[in-house]
Amino acid sequence: MKNRRRLTEIFKSTLLIIGLIFVAIPFAWILLTAFKRPVDAASVPPVIFSPFTLDNFRSLKSDEYIGSLINSVIITVLATTTTLFFGVPAGYAFARGKFKGRKFFGAFLLFSRMVPPVIYIIPLFLFFHKLNLIGTFSGLTLAYLTGLLPFTVWMSASYFQDIPTELEEAGRIDGCNRIQAFVLIALPLAMPGIISVGLLICIAAWSEYFIPMLLGGPTTSPATVGIVNFIGVDSINWGAMCAGALTLVIPVFILTLLAQRGLLSGLTAGAIKG
Image (cartoon, rainbow, N blue to C red; front, side, top):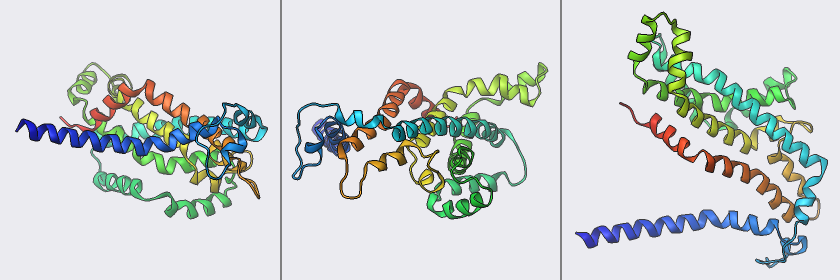
């Protein structure tokens, strides 16, 4: 029995290590290429190790890419704050409210979360074109909201459902109205989960490519779109592209690393009922 259990653990560990290797190889290649000489980064067959250089990062100092990084920060902040502002109260309403059509709207939110963005990108483009929202930060924020809001409402509702209703009822007895009970009691107790949702929204908005590629403009394109400018007509600056990819990956990695404990505890709290 012990031998079988040990073999099972070894098999699981082996599969995990193999999976980690497959996941780590692209990141390791990006890291190596970012510090290669441009001639080695574009060589065929590829050169694995090259003399250390920062020339690729110096290529990122162009006004276009720096501007796209600033756009990424602006879009991420706008999308995260707007989604949380509307999604968290809506999640509380779904968790505590008893109104007609509650199950239908809940199922609709789940369904809309499962629909790929390519389904609604054409209607969004036509609608935004009529409203002159193409290439604006407000248009991109609304477009991000269509994909991130259902997830925020669904996850926030699960966190609020874990909070005992007796706490809010006690607050109501002490004179709190529904809004005060939400702001002063439910919201602080659900804050770890809401922070987790905010981190996931932030990562999703920072990494988005498809929506800003179609709905963005020259002055509002984020770095995920701006990095494509390193692809020329007859050549590709692989070193600069990998250096730019690091500027996109490192903030997400650091943010996840710093908030790892809160992220895991928040997601677990929302996944387990009662």
